[in-house]
Length: 384
Length: 197
Image 1 (cartoon, helix red, strand yellow):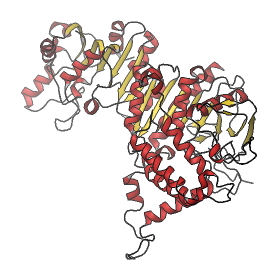
Image 2 (cartoon, helix red, strand yellow):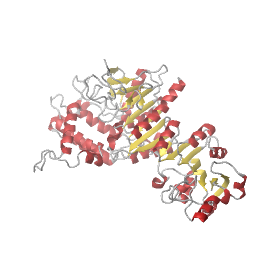
Image 3 (cartoon, helix red, strand yellow):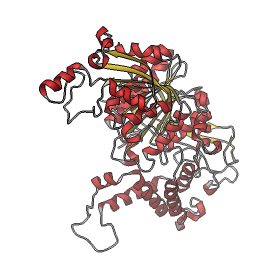
Image 4 (tube, each protein chain N blue to C red):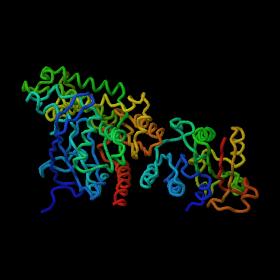
């Protein structure tokens, strides 16, 4: 029988739920007494555990980064374009670890999980999680897997911020940080968009102050609006223009306020689908984690002082049409790394798809990413 | 090995901090990393070159000198700032030269000599903009928008109070020739200058 999956796919994968019994103290001062992380791994860990690559997900991502959960899956994991045999993160050479972050809604402990103190879902009582908290929980995951030092920590967008935080929080535990379409801090405009998304959710009557699970409702409308506004920021004017232009759903204007233009239909569809699969409290947490991220802050707003703590090598990539985390933000990071005399390479990749470009394989992006990861792989094959 | 690498190498201290403007495929930095244990960065805009640098493990930053300048680098960040075969292609060579010596203690610059006798002869004989193996482009479509002679360059250094520490004149394959030294501005094809404040 022929394989049902493409040759460069990791194929059928199975997530694992790992339990961590030791309490985790969070940046907000509160503690999680114990927690679960939903994890997927691809490839094989080598004898000296030197080929581990950690994938950090973005705002709405999860542990399922590559491969298929069943032969009937229509779509593979969210970063299947970059993870697999012969792909930039080559699973023939690396042991790839991908997880659903704390506070998530795809199996890891989050607002929809049961609060051990009350026996009911955490809901709004789930502590506010930061990028640092994620990195600390990921370090525990590395311990559990027997990985003392990652070959690389890799992430796009909010995932890139986790890679950055790894480099300064656990400098000895990674050799490379790959930071794609990220930023060393959100701008006022970024925070403003997040606030609109949060307001959309919290003002939905079905939000019930975050206790919608107990009330057996769902703030679908709010979550849909949040996703719609978010989605606009992930695309570019040019890519939306090319995809939809001013195309109408009917031949002529209907002179009403229902869906008239294809772009409206698309956004509503994306929002609705998202609202069926995502937890509203998780969305609030993830956007807040984005807002709070600012590694320069404890260093008198001197980013290079923050980055001086790192010892790994960096690859920083940005995309020309990304206006959510514009190339200038990546360049701010690169300049701080140069100032701090860290090893860094940087490229701005020409791509029309806005922020989403980090998920879309283009020859230049794929080639650069592959070239870098091959270089990373050489280190552990030579050492091993 | 490229002959200019051999000439430049003794001018670089062991473990120096180096910036290479227009680093190409990273050959020079790669060589200096291995021979002299230097650290630093190359600046480049050509996508294929950037990829090759990354494959080699050379730190490369995508940055366009003409559009972005060098304002993102602090004063005295480097021991040596290099620019091989690119001075004639930037919009303001004088300002780039100034910037090089703001960022580094020393600058090393190589460029083709427009005073080379063959180019002069080409112009006299044909009355048209010279073309040669080192300068293969037509006047209207050339990256070399600021060609100069050795004398021009030295006059610029004098005006800007830049000291020339040494000058090596070679042919287009970076070989030494006795006649290059005899009358460099007429007989030399490429000059490698080592400059400082």
